[in-house]
Image (tube, rainbow, N blue to C red; front, side):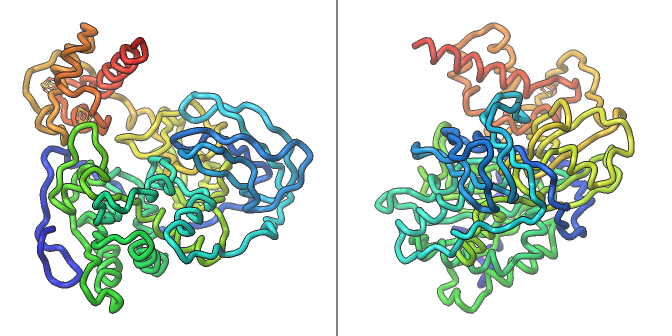
Length: 449
Ligand code: SF4
Ligand code: SF4
């Protein structure tokens, strides 16, 4: 690990590639506000990577906030809880923001937001208790990944995993909810850092933030300097503001100098990466026992009348959230859940908010139009921008020719779809679409075997 003064890693390990993007953190100074209780929530049973849940309630049931409404017996999954109190009015199929269908539980709110009487802080004395508590909380990666957190934390202690990296980079433009978490809930982060470290036996914790967030840095430094850290095992690392610094593999390399090989995970080089809001949530859950039933998200973009950071019950209709932000100021031409680089374009607002959605962005036509596509000028900027050292032009060529062997050889399947290549391309080539096509062809071919 790079050396530095107490609490701070001064030597920043730079990662290759990436792009300088306009940060547009317009909502950074806006505290998170709760939206009024929605009249209805639609809570999908597929809100995480892994097996979807099965509903455990039926139409007509009365439910309270935090009550279990969906679960799965599969390991890679996370339970789902009621986000408002009221009556279950439907258990059926719903379209997700990604266009897939999922079972969902609809709850008509009674407006009371009554907490379920079974909510109490978990008893956590051992590593196993801790992992079970994280599972029971329903936590999934709040930075957008949606991977069940208990699965990530349930590593084999004999495998030499020694470093917890806490991701506070928030490198996507517009999104500021992790920044607000650092400012508004720093004590939750502090308390969880030591609990997770102790429960899972990490030797080091690195909290990594970009250098464009001085106030968050000041607060995080206080955490890193805390008296409890007598052995100086909790460090803050300042990263150059560059997209995609927050990508897991980049984060691990910056924080530890360890390179995650293609097709491998941070755990393969002794690291676990957690989003800072997920860490803060664990602290609150251990104190209260209230599971993940709401989340913060940034609502911004040139078509939003009053950009805000809001806290919403899971399953709230995106249209209701936009309405709370004053509605549209202009005709929205492009709607996105997540950031503009890696987020998901959606076709309308009649969709529920999922656990992993950290932003809703709406852009007017003039801000959403793609560059006109022209011929490739072989400038090489796409390859220079790729943090994984891929050569996008070769992948495009192989994808067009359905040349599976070449796609495998040049690593098309490891592309993380960060969009740095497309962002850099002066010819307006839709490179990410080609990367997705290449990966889809590879998946198709492997399914045939
Ligand atoms: S989208 Fe894929 S190919 Fe393009 S820069 Fe990101 S990782 Fe590299
Ligand atoms: S950046 Fe665009 S124009 Fe330049 S080599 Fe790559 S695809 Fe071609």
